[in-house]
Structure formats: C-alpha cells, structure tokens
Amino acid sequence: MGAPETAPPITIAEDELLSHPVVIETGKSQPVVVQRRPTNPKWSKDKARVGDEVELSADASGDPDGTQAAFTIFEHDADGKHDKVVDLAGRVQGGKAKVKWKYVYTQDRDDVRGPSDRGKPYTLPEYFFVVEVNGVKSARSPILKFNTSLKFQVRYPGGEPVTDEWRFILRHKASRFVIEGKLDKQGFVKVDDCPPGGWFLEVPGRLPRIEVK
Image (cartoon, rainbow, N blue to C red; front, top):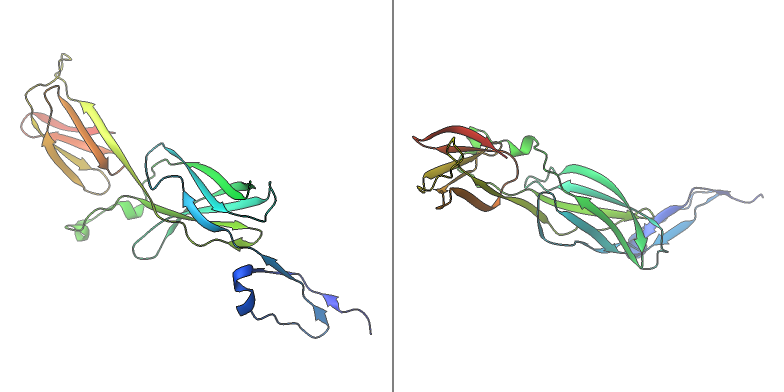
C-alpha cells in the first residue's frame, strides 16, 4: 500500500485545539497547524478626533518579526449590522502586531436620520477591529469613539466681530443633532465633543442660514 495522500493543512487556534474535532479521511493524512491566537487587541486611545492618527495593536508572542497581520476595522451598529470600514496590512514586531490608521469622517446611510428617529439620542461614530495572524483571528477590540470640535467667529460684513452675545442654533447636516447657545464676547462659537461632519449655523432674526464645516 502506498503512502497516504496528504490533504491541505488546517489551522487551529491553540485555545480551540481540545474542542476541535479533527477528521482524518480514509487514505488521506491531514496535517494540523496549531497557531496561537492574537490577544489583547486594543487602540492607542479610547476616544479620538477627526484627523487623529491612532495605533491598533494586539499581542502576537511566538510569531517572528515581520509576520504579516491583517487588520479589519468595522463601524459598530447597535443592531449588530456592523459596517466594514477598511482593511489594513500590518506586521508583527517585538511580539506585537501593529498598524496605524488616520480617521477621515465619511457619512454613510446610518448617519442620516429621518422623522422616525426624532427623539432618539445621537451616538458618536464607534469602531472596533479584529486582527488575523497566520490564519487565526483575535477577538474584537474595545470600542473607539470619534468626535470633533467646532470653533469659528461670526463677523459683520466689514470684518468686525459680533460682540453682542447673539443666540445661535447649530444643526448637524446628517443627524439633525441640534446645539443652541450664545456667541461669546468676541463673537466665537466653541463646541467640544460634537458629531463630525457639516453643520448649519442659524442666528434667528439676524443672519441667514450659513453652512459651516
């Protein structure tokens, strides 16, 4: 009888080895490659602003430097229908798989709110990632939230700042999120931790609606 035919190897995460049934077909041998799962996936921060660069990492001890690591970032949706955002190619260095990502806000259909969303709180964009090393994926990373800040000055046509502390209304273009307040004494609007994307500024009875970014 000749040597058994060798089937393609299957890769099994080390933590699944005991529970994974390995079936050997008659006349074939199937090698099993045991690979340690990437652990502790994390972002370099838990909240970031539009334009920030963040680092994604996971522990990959046992994998030699230079091993490829495939990162996939998803936008988290409360209904479980998470949207894939981007694939990133990283590498293992010093026992850690790493890659960097610079966030640029792109409006998608989930950001657009209609009449049925009235009264529901707006949530900032949230993201998680998984990383795959040698055919084995990590668990999901913790959530990363993105926000932005607004700062601009309202001036008269001649260039002089408005110093009368006018009441203003800011309306988020995509989400219908509304912020109300007063100009400061130098005519500035300053808002922290607000949704990314474009806005409309209204100063009731004084200025027409203006688009701000």
